[in-house]
Image (cartoon, rainbow, N blue to C red):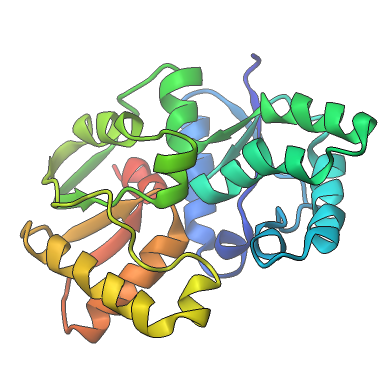
Length: 241
């Protein structure tokens, strides 16, 4: 694999947390990668797919395929969006052999940020420093669909000045789940409060995760609880110096 990577920044980064995309690019460039940003990129189609709108999801997925067709490697700051492309695009195009072949080609070239660093770039230490006590939240898609568990922890362990304190349980859902939080607001809120109790029990100042959707849910619950604990995406931590 070459040294050129294309960023897929996801909707939530593009619209609400652009700094995370820039921090991800900074870390990759620090490691010697040439980073490009295909400007025609849009959504991966996950919201439509999860809501049962398969025809609409296919339309968006085709655009994604067209946009990143020539990319050597695609890196995304999201386990859920990476999982959508790598695991669910094939479901959308089972009856279209030519498109399915394009999907299978792309599946091998898209990576969630932390696993790209540890498995492709082959690094644990990116030269980051953050004097803080943090805890890590395992996002559902990253953990359960992509099997991401060790990579972010290996990276955090090499951040100078950082102390990682594991919450119990770290793997429990925060309650966001995309449209789940809208359709089942009371249950989502209860799950978030349980997660907040686990976070506060560590005494950490910061919660780190791979998905901003989880962090947005967690930050909202922390704010409602009157807590001063902050949230950070892994890319923000690794870009710190």
